[in-house]
Amino acid sequence: MKRQGLPSKLSVLRDRRWVAIAMVLGVLLCGGLWITLAHSGGGASESQTAAPATPASPPPLPPPGIALSGWKLSLPEANDKGDAASIEPAAFKEPWMTALPDGGLMFWAPTSGATTKNSTHPRTELQSLHYFSAGTGVHTLAASLTLLQLPQDGGGIILGQIHGAGPISSVPYVMLRVQDNKLRVVVKQVGKGKKLINYPLLDNVGLNNQLDYTITDLGNGSMTFSATYNGQTRQSTAPVPTKFLGKTVRFQAGDYQQANSSSGPQDGGRVVFHRLAQQSTNP
Image 1 (cartoon, rainbow, N blue to C red):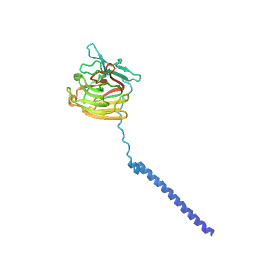
Image 2: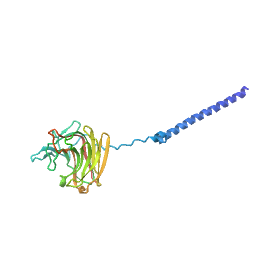
Image 3: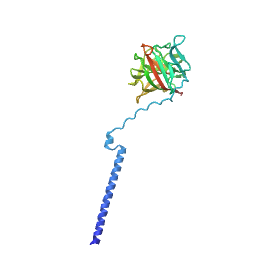
Image 4: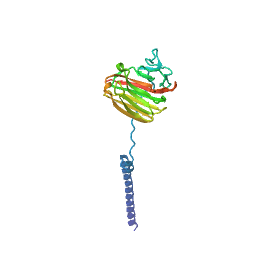
């Protein structure tokens, strides 16, 4: 009787062992299926939660510091003829443009300063000595700056330009302007007259925070503008107006304040440029 009972017990043990193995395999298979579904987005919780949108990449910044070679400096102080003075090639000039320890530049332009012949707004602004033909080749102006002071009458400041050169040296063409806490690009459509188009970039642009921008002539009849502020990056595209295609132009950057009235000698625009660079690629 004992010999007959032993095989029965062994049989029961074998059955229990196979049941245990089956349960383990079932758990493993179910776990593997769950992991596969989770990675493939097939789980219910994954399908109900959308992946966060990828933010636009900020434009590339030029290297730290600012090289003055290749620039001319316009000043809000009068020359012998009573017009705004200039320094070519550009050099530091207190209190208008001063060097900072990190290689940046402090620009100060009072509303009561001297102006150029064809403007009513004083400026402390760098003008490129490298000219190019609008709509030909790829040409980029890139900057990183901090606004410290805006003119009191609300006129704002033009921080970067594509400006006429040579025969049209008196004509502003593309102007990146901060005014009423908004950053926009103004593109003139004619050489003379007020026909222009505003291209909005950023809202809520204030003082004491870094602002980065790029202005690019793509060389194919269009331009792109990009700006980053407080983690927000916005871009806009505009055609090169027919009037300016092939015309000689240049970049300008700095503190071209736009006040139409002055509230005293301390009223004006004050900007720190941390980085500034221009790059051209001919076709």
